[in-house]
Amino acid sequence: MKNIVLPILVLAVIVQLPLLLKSQKIYSCDSKYDADFTVFVVGSKYDADLIVFKADSKYDATGNKGIWFFTDSKYDADKKIFFTDSKYSADLLIYFAKSKYDAGWKKKTKIYLLY
Image (cartoon, rainbow, N blue to C red; front, side, top):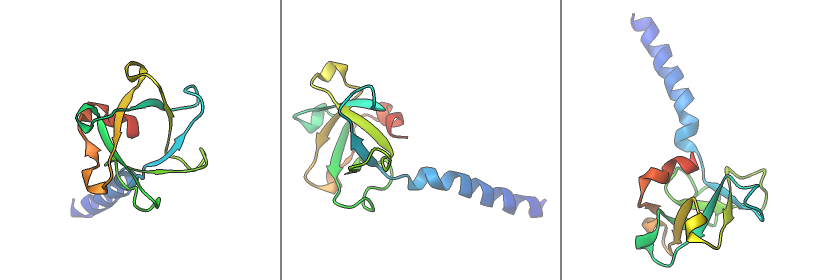
């Protein structure tokens, strides 16, 4: 029995690792039809589903914690978003923070959008 447990444990870690290390490389689309979901930028962090910090490096944008790196290529992106002009047509409401320590989910019901 011991001989079976270790390989199963190793396999479970290998399968889960990409989900844990997933980065948040974002591409901003010109059309909502090309996007995975739509985003509206709110004026207050209290109205946001997610507080986002724009990272300078793709290596800083790890996990699903609201630290995004905006890429110039949709092929390099993990998610494609479209910024909409209407709060009511948006799938996700975000607020841009000045510090990466402020980034994070306010309403975790929308967290599935970035998996």
